[in-house]
Amino acid sequence: MTPIEFLEFRGYLSAGSGFQSLQFRIIEMKLGLTDRFRSSFKTKYFTGTMFKGEQNVELEQAINEESLLIQIERWLETIYDNTSFDFLTVFTSSVENFIEHGKKQKIMNGVAVETAERDVETSKRLFASMIDSSEYQKLLNNNERRISHKAMLTALMISLYHQQPCFQQAYQMLGLLMDVDALMASWRYKHMLLVQRQIGRKPGTGGTGGFSYLQQTIT
Image 1 (tube, rainbow, N blue to C red):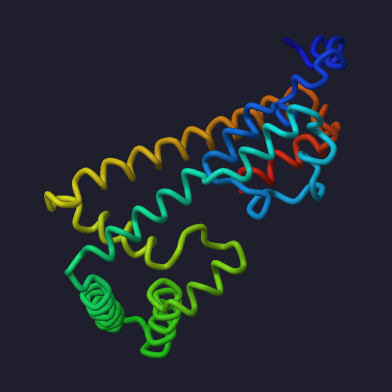
Image 2: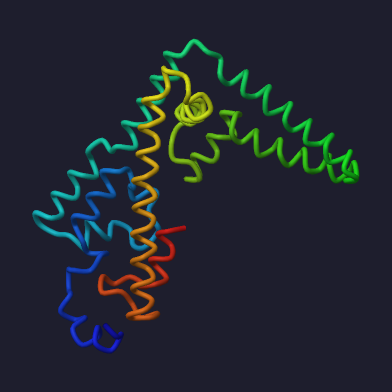
């Protein structure tokens, strides 16, 4: 179908657009995409303008119910609390040794000492944002992270020690969750390309910026 052919009936789509799909909005809410993490468009646009009456009630119910993300976060935290292994201490020591080893290797390969030391400091800052709970909390407050510090450490521990019998099932679950995330991202990307091909930079049928709005949802 050419863009011109699409435009001939585009006006009849009305609430059939992806942005106006109540079902898709509910799926997002159930997975854990709340307004706090959503690409900024209009405050209360979905519940106050887009969906009304019974649809608004249904959407509000989905918003107020516990999402899959919250349940996964609590599950991961429980695993961490029930694990006697001091993962954080062992992991911290391993990473620090890895960083120092990398510095020595760079110097041996002719990299200037000042450059190697600067790279080490950069690596340490990035590492601190992962293991330091206060630094991690700052990222969480800025919406740059989605789960608690404890839950993140648990996911990391499961990933690194997934061959241990006690973590194998949890590792499979995390893999399936990443598959869901990848499928959602793939759908959004393909939808964005379709919109760009059919309407270019024209506004979307739901009142958004169309292609530019969809770009924001996948970044």
